Amino acid sequence: MAVIAPSRTRAAVLRLLQRDERLFAVLLAFVMVGGLASLGLVPLRPRHRVDVYSLVIWFALYKAGIFALVTVNPRATRRIFTAALCIDLLLVFGLLYLTGGGDSLFYLLFFPLVAVNAYYFGPWVGLLMALVAGLLYAAASALVPPWVGWTPPLILMFLVGLPAFALGQVAERERRARSEVERLYAELTGTLTRLQTAQEELVEAERMATVGRLSLKVAHEVRNPIAAIELNAELLGDMVQGRVSEDGTEATALVSAIRDQVTALDALTEEYLAFARFPRPQFEEDSINDMVTAVAEFVRPLAARQGVGLQVTTDPAVPPMEFDRTLLRQAVLNLLKNGLEAVSQSGGSLTLATQRVGEMVEIAVTDSGPGISPEVGRRLFEQFFTTKPQGTGLGLAISRQIVEEHGGKIRWSSMPGAGATFILALPIRKLEHV
Image (cartoon, rainbow, N blue to C red; front, side):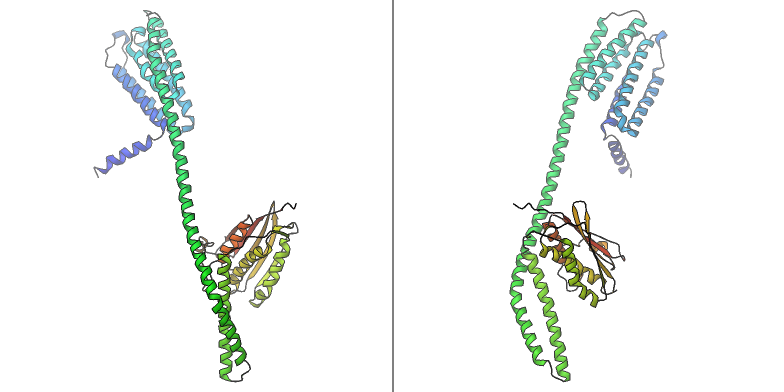
């Protein structure tokens, strides 16, 4: 513990001094309090004697107050340091006046005061402070005879002003260089982040391209056997149909089950093919409302068999626009199928609605199902991710791809136990016909 405590203290002090204004306040306090204490070692004449050590303590407390102010209110740092500079100049003038005027050694406090402030405020402020310091020295000498003349104040102005100007120039160059380094660092960090994102997207795109090529090949190879199985199952069904026996009834049921599974497998194959060779949209002027109504009428018989109510609401303000009816119909149909599967167990309801929002048209599919959990929601549009026993995980991915090809976006919202809503937001597209 004896080793850990100093390191923690050192780390805390370094964190406290990370900001420039705090570090400047500490450095200014160090040079001024230290300079005052050093000059206190010089014995003063009896009639000019002051309690220098008490003065050092009060001066240190004053500097601690400055540090506290810039820590609590960093936005007012420049105003605080400007006020502190004026107070420091007046304090040095007061010391000169109390300790012999031109004969006092406390004029040496002007050197660290002007130099450190020139580093913070810049070269021209440093020159101005040197001029003020010389005038204050001359004023103290005039108020406390004997008058030393103008030569010592002028020498003080030059000896303080020239180094202060040089130090201010160096400080400004250092600040400009640091700002440039910070700017370059920010640009480099942004570039590295973009490169990393692009690399991840490239890896994902390559992976998906490989999966797509594999899916396309497998789907092509599987289609012919599926077609043959379906044809033979149909022929076999015709052969056993009409046989009045227990075996004949069982054979008919088995053939029907085979055909159902073949149909499901064929649908999966078609979905993989649709994803692997996604067509470019063919934009033609059409009615979104008519398309949505037609999709709803197509799905309504299936919804009725499952005991699901389907409501359709169209906004008359939705204008005719350019879109690919086939592709967009597929996107809406995918969402309706997902909604049906979500409410089929409980016999809930589905709502399909259109709405114009500014220069966008929104198609919303809402179900009253159990909702979507946050864990599933994070992977909702990920290809091949599905929670269904026989799903491909491509329905939502295809829908998003279709919407993005139309220049739009798909968003969703859900509360567990309160259903889910998917919204296709499409820009109103009007092609110029020549």
